[in-house]
Amino acid sequence: MKTSTTARLMRGATVLSLCGLLLACASYAPKPLPTQTPWNDRTDLRVDARDIELPVLAAQHIDLNAPWTMQAVATLAVLNDPRLKATRDQAGVARAQAFAAGLLPDPKFSASRDIPQGQSGATSTAYSLGLHFDLGSLITRHAAVAAARANLRQVNLHILWQEWQTAAAAEMDYIALVGLRNRDALLGTERDATLVRLQRDRAAAGAGTQPRTVADADLVELQALQQKLATDARQHESHVAELDGLLGLRPGSPLRLADLPRFDQEAVKGAAAALSRLSSIRPDLMALKAGYASQEHKLRESVLAQFPSVGVAVLRARDTSSVNTVGFGITLSLPILNGSRGEIAVQSATRQALYDAYALRLREARAEVAHLLADLDLLQRRRIALEATLPSLRDAAREAEAALQRGGITLLQAQAQRHTLLEQRLALQANAQQIAEQTVALQLLTGHGVFAPTAKPQIRTPLNHNGRHD
Image (tube, rainbow, N blue to C red; front, side, top):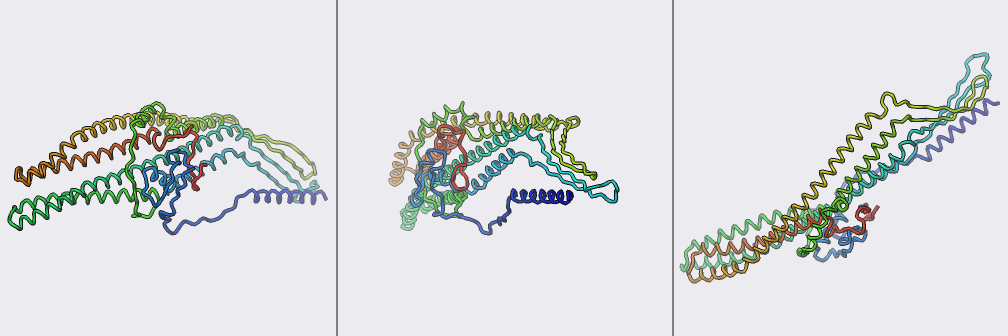
């Protein structure tokens, strides 16, 4: 009777354990890969910027049918870049790792049954039940959880830095496209004027009032301008492709862009003042600090793991003589041969590598900002010099054209004067574009401009797939 009761209890315990395991298990559902390229259309672009933790971008009210400003393009890139969507998945992995680090190990249940085989002294079937707990993980749990949380913070900051870089890349493409448009406007005006001169000089050559060499010189000048426009067209297509990629648009999608914004000199001074606070502004530097903090906890976890690991078990048993017992067991690992010494050495070396990497990156960051400030100063001085000589070159070109019509100067002299004026105007346009590019780079490296933080940039988190913050 006792034997049948015990057997039923064992079967019931086994069934309950299996049911508990099945209820605790996660379910599986397949997720097939896409078979088509998921392009965005202009009407599909996400435009709600309220959840972006950059006030300048969050305040954008984007009209997709109007010409896009530089800040609107940066906002659209942060919201719609397919590469950012893939990068944000890293935060999900880090959250899962932080969750896993906080879980305690499952207890282990053991059961056995011994059936006597012909022994005359046996009076019943023997069995044993045990419930085992590993207490070793409790020693290192706090350090493991802290390391996982610091790693999650590092991943979030890394993704935030990717968002900053995406916004800056979109601004750079915007500046390049608007700069090419302005440059081509100058070249196109000069090309049209040269074409008019070519037609006039060909007519004069046909009438015998002017040598053919004049028209030939116009043709050479026209071909040179057309070559420059053709080169610019290739660059334009390249930057359009880059910007389409940032927005997830189908290659070749038409873009309507506004003009370059004005860059305030006071903002440059503010960026210069932030040089000593880069480590608390830049997400990449804060991510390195979070990674270092995570490594500190990992090293502490390895140090704690060298202490003996303890396991306890509660036991219930009966032997073949119907003697019932209740007891407990203890297992103790002795750190004699390993003692986690190898793991401690690995984690210590990793910590030193992270320490040196952070110091190097901080030094490089400050050097980059100092270089940009010096370059901007040179560009501003160059712009002043170009603007100062532009009026006199414009007057000289008009006088040379009039003198050529009177026969006072040669064709080559007039062409040289026109070429000098065009090069000066192109130099001014290139200078404006370079100032814009360097200003955007400076804003990225110092957290100013569109990257100006809210009250505490260190607590910001990146957008998730739904355009919301984690």
